[in-house]
Structures are given as C-alpha cells and as structure tokens.
Image (cartoon, rainbow, N blue to C red; front, side, top):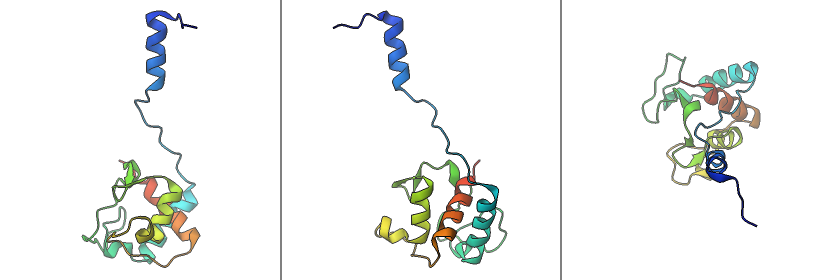
Length: 123
C-alpha cells in the first residue's frame, strides 16, 4: 500500500523524525545538588578542576567544570547522563581507560550527589 499523505504529510513525517532541540534532563532535587557541591569540595575535586561556586583551590590539571550540565559528553566519550556521570566521578578509569582522572574513594550516594551537582551547572 502506498501512503497518500501528499507533500504536507511527507514534510510532517520528515519533521517528526528530526529532534532539533535536545530535551534537557530534569535537575535533581536541591538537597542532592547541595550535598554534591559539599562532597566535591570535601573530596578535593578542586585540586584538579576549577569548581563553580568554590573559590579555592582552582585546579588547572583537569578541565573547568563550569557549565558541565550543558555538555553532551563526559570526558569526550560518554553520554552525559546522571548514572554514567556518577560512575565516572567515582571510577573514571573503569569507564574511560587511560583517563587522567583517578578513581576517587567515595560511596554511591556521594557519587550520585556530585553528578547531580555537576549536571546542575548550566550556562
């Protein structure tokens, strides 16, 4: 059977297949975001990274984490979603072999909260 939707129908089908604007994931709750910022500071993430809203230290070994929530990829290779980011902040080398970021001793709750805080950093 041949579809007879005409030019307008064909255009609607083509446009429906396109997703011109990515849908931003919802932010985590404010408590998780606040705990994540505190955990990033306590665990020393600023030794290597510039952390938004944290004045010192301002590490320069790793990239600045300002605007991290706008980034599509983690370490240039992994989709930036909350579960993957939480796994990455805890043990980057297991997800990106050869990563300059070391595994950081933290529990799953801290990893989740840090990931939530990072994803809340949007321009």
